[in-house]
Amino acid sequence: MARLSNQEGLAEWLPGRLAEENPVITVIGDAILDGWWDGLIERFCREAPAPVVQVKRRDFAPGGAANTAVNLAALGARVRFVSIVGEDTAGQQLKDRLVAAGVDVTQVISHPEMTTTTKFRVSSAGQVMLRLDDEAERVPADALRSLAEAIPGSLEGSDAVILCDYGAGALEGEVRDALLKALGPAADNGPVRRNELVVVDAHHPGRWAGLMPDLATPNAQEAALLLGVELPGGAARSPFVEAHANQLLAASGAAAVVVTLDRDGTLTVRVDNEGNTVTHRTWARPETEKQASGAGDTFVAGLTLARAAGLPLTTSVDLAQAAADVVVHRPGTSVCSTEELARHLREFADTALSDTELAKQVEAHRQEGRRIVLTNGCFDVLHRGHTRYLNQAKQLGDVLVVALNSDSSVRQLKGPDRPVNHEADRAAVIAALSCVDHVTVFDTPTPIPLIELLRPDVYAKGGDYTPEMLAETEAVERCGGTVTILDYVPEHSTTAVLQRIRSTGEPTT
Image (cartoon, rainbow, N blue to C red; front, side):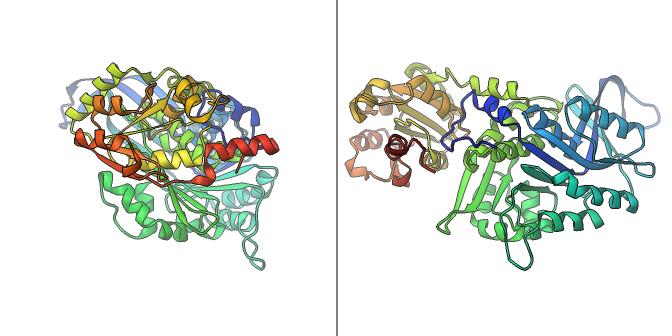
């Protein structure tokens, strides 16, 4: 399969390009049918102090591993789903919805003694009042045997494999043995490179450490189980996970661990080629609380698709966060399609704010007690050095404002052949990053007028400067702020990228 350049940013055309790659992805795991029953509450029942819900609408959707499968199909993958369901109404409904979504269910085992896991949520006025779970007490041994026998064929020709282990029993016994044999490293030769990308999305990811997966995607609670500790709440979770990065990698056996933190976004930890532990953060864009379910499945689907198509891990995580942001704002179990993701990214195309509007937004944030961080730069041909820098800047406060040099000022700074991308395109790509809250364009020789207007708490610049070198330092301090110098990654500079392209026709890695 062709691989996308690792210089791709979150432009609106990227979801379509990923769909064109059309990778084959096999999803193996616990299937669930989600039921959403919504109605009116006008009275309480006589026999108990419980509300009476007059059901007006019944919706059903694939859940669990099946939700991951339909999200992948909606984003353009060729999806094989491997699981066990019952020969019951719920099992047939689930298979029908998977087929309608374009998922291959050839390897879904239907068994007469199996109960298809179903989760019914009863709600009124957007509030879930009750959830009823109908689950199998056990998965029949002969059903597990049949599924285990199907594993080798289901993996053949796959670009990626996702194990969705929610503890419902489909990945136990002989199935687990078959997966460890088919996907695990060779016992006599040590770790070997597989053709498939292997992703573990499990309630207990440590159970699959022997696979040495490429990615593990625990949520906060699952990460706590891996570490054997209780995670702190709120904003302290991400620093805590980062401090325990090496333990997470060791306990999961994974090359990279992406911890999903709900409204706090995600934190990715991995070890780079030099043996250094590195992290990457995303920030969610939550709105009014909705009764949404399955955003984590959407995240895993987007992440796996992007990695299978060859995008770098940081870009893949950012794209997955954008896909999750689409569905988390909807009630029920939702799916993010290629078109919806492209439309979501398109919304950032005209997001560069004027000075006046930006000042209003910043003042509103300040009234809420939020800490304002400002940084600026050309940000032409976005690369890993940029995203690392912006993630560091975000962590200095609550709101990150990025001021882009206008096209004319970039030409004055960099020469007549720059910028490669016009200011509107640069603004759209930067705004799509989850760590960035606001973008503006300035045309003055320095951002001092903008500093005086916004009065940021922190002004951040790259580590090739010192505060004494910056003309902006005096203005920042006069406005009550501080200057912070962040890491500089010279090997990932835009100039180096362009020199490589011009000399070889290929971008840097």
